Length: 413
Ligand SMILES: [Mn+2]
Image 1: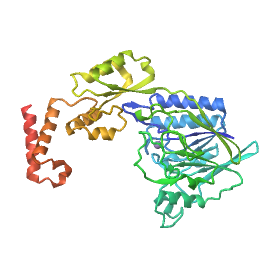
Image 2 (image 1 turned 60 degrees about the horizontal axis):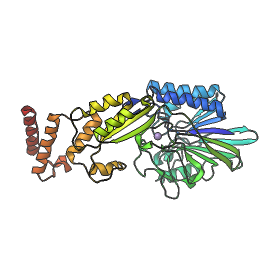
Image 3 (image 1 turned 120 degrees about the vertical axis):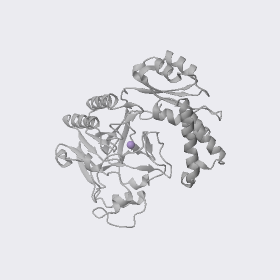
Image 4 (image 1 turned 60 degrees about the vertical axis):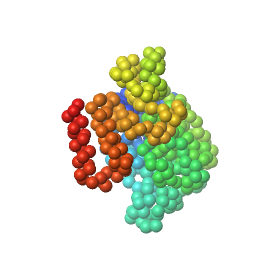
């Protein structure tokens, strides 16, 4: 019995200014269906975050339709759980009817998880579908109906203990959670929206399962044993994922305790390229860049002071493949750019404003805007640098003084 383990599809995701439903995600769906033709899996498990939003766009819904219909027409079973980005009710709409065609979509959390047993060549595999869970969702009436569940770890263990698992056959759990092994956290990418350390579950909570198909963390990796895995997201969803493999996770169950994991290559519509340097360095690299159609580029500008028309020059040279420009003014002598927060902390407030403005508006602030910020900062200095620690404590008369000075600046300009 063979299945593909995928997850964190995030249909509808934007990569900076690029709507990935426009080309990339559809390209991936087609390559994935081709991989299904080549490797002939019996099933595909989708471990949550089908969509990027709880109310998906029509384009995102069409992609899920294309994927699931394509698999169903090939006679492949499909197992889906909602992730924290999905609406469980919307995702599982008419799932009772779809189940008749071998498409199983778990919806709201229940005491007994949806599970389906497939049999092939004498090997029986039961697929257990555990929707994204948190302590409150497990505590309620209709699920475990108890008020002593404090942590995600407890919630998962108690719910799984209550399942009628047949240990004599192979069991596959599909889950979307933050899973640790021996206290060691998985390697995050920059594209998850997870607050560090939230909702941790120790991997030994899943010891009864022969394979655990996880979603939630966007870098593909094993957690502890080889058979507890994150599939990772299918495409590059953040520049921090550069260099990561986006191969497919293919699992073959040969018998109880005999589970083999392979990684199968799949073609990417675009690769991500990050360029960092001064404007003149970036322009030079842009002129030399080949295959502009198959890359998305992020430029990190490191000049202390930018010449006029810097961004326009970059856009002219790179064209449409340039999808993001960032400012990174190096003060610490560290050129790796890995720790953005540390770099930001080393920036002056004026520089941070410039960076923020750039990310919001795709252009640098003009003279008036810079003067405004300077004026606010002047006020800040005059008042001992305490102003912006807590604006609620600024007396009304003083905030009026700030506003007046800003207005005066605007009129002067
Ligand atoms: Mn996700």
